[in-house]
Length: 225
Image (tube, rainbow, N blue to C red; front, side, top):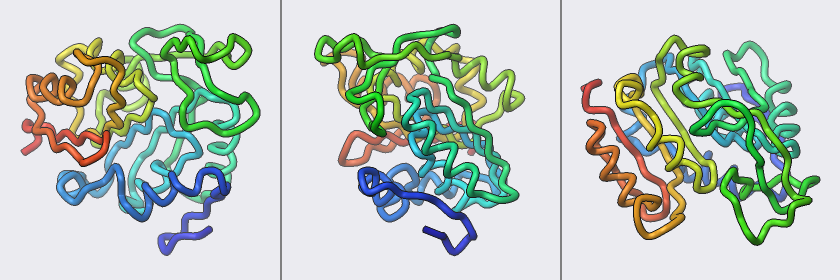
């Protein structure tokens, strides 16, 4: 497929629903959020899968600098393919997971050979030991320090329940460097690891929070006006 902005991308049939959610329904980009973005934002895509959100960010902000992180091997192969199709775009991809600790961790998923939308660092009793792989991990604080000079205008997170660990362990001073967030907040428990608890936490971090009808949460840093 090819967009009007000149982007080219491969959309496997099994991932068409994700492509539609991102490009047609704009799942991570409500108008309120887009209005807060500069013309050349720094965009972090955590849980990039095949790269559709990263491509969407480059579609609506062609001058963006995009950094995509995807740990699952099958997904990363698709991400590499879509990355290779682009020309003259400021887009970097990383075969890594973003976590609350740097080092390595076990990533669990249903099928090693097929792309997945459910791969997660969360331990699951239903996942067999054979369907896991050890992946490199970095913290969001480390990425901001080493890759973006401390700047992030648009943070998208879709990491199947591990978003809480990433954000709850992030130092408060780092939140001041993030302009907007779009987070897939999957419920993990009935306490801190669910959408309303995360919304309250982000309000304490000086964000205005918008809640979508589904699991998506949008946050706008009040410090940026």
